[in-house]
Amino acid sequence: MVAEGAVGIIGGSGLYRMEAMEVVQERAVSTPFGAPSDSYIVGNLAGRPVVFLARHGRGHQLIPSQVNFRANIYGFKELGVERIVAVSAVGSMKEEIHPLHVVLPDQFIDRTRQRADTFFGDGLVAHVSFADPVCPELHAALREASASCGTAVWPGGTYLCIEGPAFSTRAESRLYRSWGASVIGMTNLPEAKLAREAEMCYATVALVTDFDCWHEAEEAVSVEMLLDNLRSNALTAQRILKALTGTLPSERSCNCGRALEKALLTAPADIPPTVRKRLDAIIRKRIQ
Image 1 (tube, rainbow, N blue to C red):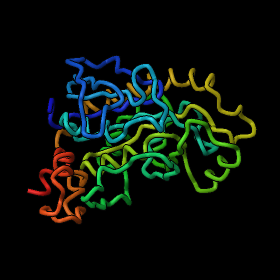
Image 2 (tube, rainbow, N blue to C red):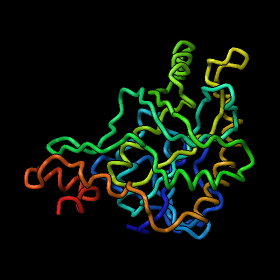
Image 3 (cartoon, rainbow, N blue to C red):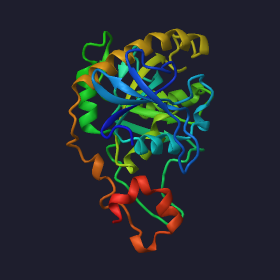
């Protein structure tokens, strides 16, 4: 543990470092689930301890299905992080949400197929509540922090998570619009589930790069289009995060830190020793 109560920041496409962050150290963390995406950057931002991780690696080497989400979240837990803010590049699924806008989703839809998205199993059963997947306290703080970021901010909405790495077909994109999705991305839902199981707060800053491919009047999404908007969005994200860490209360008043209180179904005496050891950072205070 490096800083109990620190804020974790997951940098998505385009955000591989925090310019305003005072770096104290890099930490390579070994987890029972393998290696995280990169070393964790530990330091301070606006006077607040923070831990930064590049989701795809600092050279953007991992496609979404190759990101070791369990290792990433477990590593944050080991380092003392209690809250995670995930920054992500997304496509817009609504006419009124334009590229370079910011969306703060409060709901998710899962369309992934190949993701390990739970810490449990192998002799230990847990079912966490996930009706409201975003921490309301952290979400409210992000809304306030985003108010002066210099672009339009949408304070709610649904993030639809697809497998990738290919973008959607036009038929898929139109289907997702009919479901009421606000934005589309490839990474955040596994993180949100795992953060809840680890009793950590989680919220997303979704930065719009394109209109996916449903919009007949706009060019279909391409890498060239994304790169220009990613650079602008990275600057917006850093302004929001600096404002957030400067004002976020030090103590949590939400229920995220109690997510496992009534979620563990397996009796402590029946948990296999290997599983107990593997999940020690997550379950230790619930099985004493």
